[in-house]
Image 1: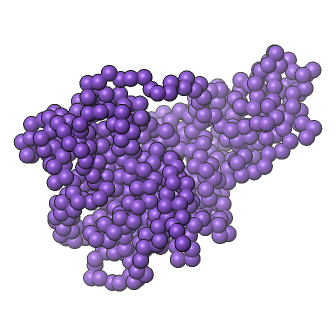
Image 2 (image 1 turned 120 degrees about the vertical axis):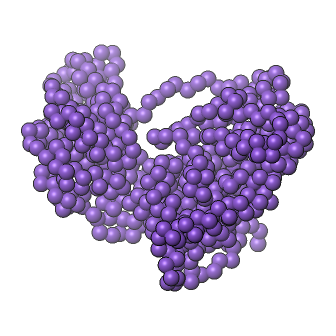
Length: 598
């Protein structure tokens, strides 16, 4: 029977590669562009594999660490900013080491397309003295994940696996290979403090790690994913998805060149020295940061090699954002001093810029508007957080003044209030983010007697990343029904005495609920509870009674619902977009917005 070939998204390929490699525990926190990896494992797993959406990346890594201590192969998934959350245990874990193979998949987001920052995880590998594997295609990612597990077990260290957005979300035909032979986890064995991090143990293990890094530079020089080809006086060094762009563009250029593909940290010095031999000039194309470029510059300095290295540090390659086929093509033609020909197929015209907005029927729209109306005329600052509700910063709502990172809205609000005690400080946070990193902020506020209003926007899902479950939903990543963790009960147990439950679709009631806590002091919580339209079916769309509509535009100007627009001097409601949420109804003093006839 022949091998099966499937058209797979890169994230699916990574997941199936991990299953093939014998992974036994998979943990993570959803974050674009990594989310589909864990979801695919959850769908494809058998009874041997345990899968969980953890409350945050730190918890995910620590659960996986325990499983790796017991000898299991484990995988942790997150996006690049999630690595910041997991960095505390990860730094220590490399010194402690693991018994089973541990691969931490950190999906970088050049652009950034859906992230707070552009971060290059290869830097973290250097900083934390970790191996990093950098796949360039979905096909390579499928094979490389198994090799990452093998290297982790060979050196008893966790490793980072760093796909970028275009590898994660592109599709390719992948041949599925038979499962690799995998030994069963032998279980945790007490080992005279091996897994207890003490300064003396850290000092000893640090020396071991440094020795391993030297060995890895040689080991990776013969690793098959690090490749050297071609010949000539000009060289191109690249890695990750940029390698695919380079290969595509070089097919047009009839010039001799050497091509170096780097897929790992630590840097393969012996292979790089072979690449540099007899070259006059090198162009380095990579994303995000000049990691390969700086390694080559350092190597030239160490070995007294005289040649020109061009790239991000020299200004020959862009130093921010994604590389594209066209940007790489332009850099290569410039490097070879050739005139850039027109593309075989003209580029399509630029698409219109459409800023993201809260969906029609989103409960957050009512919550934001209610707070805005209740606080009208008062000095107020609105601290936001990471999630769909960050879009509350857009006009006409304009209700997010700060947004830093997961969970920071609650604590930033406390800091502003300490400097401006006469200001009303609101903190907005979603349900999944509340469980992720919101809890410590609430504890801090209660303990330090802060004077803030926390608006918890509970839409019953992790909406921004595709409606993954969280502890408040009563279901796990594997689909098992479990006990829901009540946000109300958690906040009450922390010590918040003023907690008001609010229906954000009831606009008049929501406004009154907000007004009811404005004059009070201390930590007050408004718990807005309304389902995301992606998980709850909408009702009959509303309609405009044209005879009553005066064209005043109040409904359109105040809430910014994408289902409403003006045409021929009258408001129009798009029945395809309208979910019948009713938030707009109370805004019309002429009673022109009516429930549709279905």
